Length: 452
Image 1 (spheres, rainbow, N blue to C red):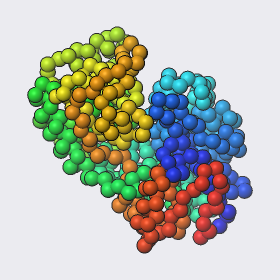
Image 2 (spheres, rainbow, N blue to C red):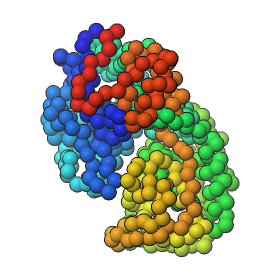
Image 3 (cartoon, one colour):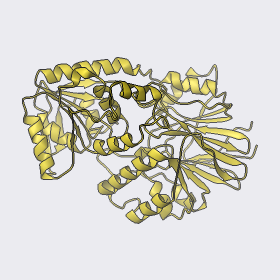
């Protein structure tokens, strides 16, 4: 085996700045290039990427989430001239997120020009299509079951098979049937470990509770507010609500970037990207799209009219469900709804995703009632939150059982844990000791992959 090294520029024993370099004396391949979002602060860039950008032979993006994609346009700024490989849906989603990030942070990391350069150098592909990187080195994408277009990256490096999972999910979700396993035995497995000490419940159980509470809340003339991640979780929740005919008479409002992501999702509703099971469900329900139901009402960003619509929804005595950004309550339409509805003890605020320490969502999750939000005028405002708080244990990442399965069934001789905190990784190190001996990387220190 050639002496292949891996260097991590982030996401070693934490989540954020996913970016990993595979290299030997002749080749350099970068997997992902994300930023780390900082609650109430500016994002952090992956250290070390700028210095190696110009020398890269290829770049692969596993999926569009900003902690994996947010620094990609910087590669063009630093002189990378090659292609950017990703799936078709990832291109559309990532481009939308990149443009949105420019609005939030401006040109701190990269500019509109850099974004244009990258966009014109993107090479899209389907799952299971081999891409030649160099003589003796190929790569292909496998379904990760995480979000639309999300992929694992399987690299054949002169006979050594390396699988980088990106973010994977083993659970059946509305659009996916879990992650895909490669047919070949893997030599090196580089795997996320987000839920390394957590059993994730089956989705059906959580979905039943969500639908029942939503129906009860709305039928009593109150509101159920569901702050959700624009990519992935919001579509899953909306599909769960759409496939329940008992909710057909209840207005379901969709607010924020969710609407753009719904349109992208509709474009990729085929067996190439989502499960046949899901498409059969749509066919049985006589729907072309899960977002087309008459009680699904999009709220688009059109300045004063948008704020007026939110006020009407919030003040109405008719019950409803509101699915809105942002997922961790750091900004966006959710702050308007907290301002207008937060004092109602009968309204429900439902959490459907992980809340990072330091975010507004985490403060509420941990019991805080006195909050500082951004009002519709853009000024900071203190409120007292009186809503009922409900927590739904959804996750877009593999359960600990799923992590053990991929380690066992790939037969990997060298396993590297990334994208998880130290506690999770320490648990895995003990949990899988009967089948594997994983290790953890040190940031910015090149590490040789085990010879096979």
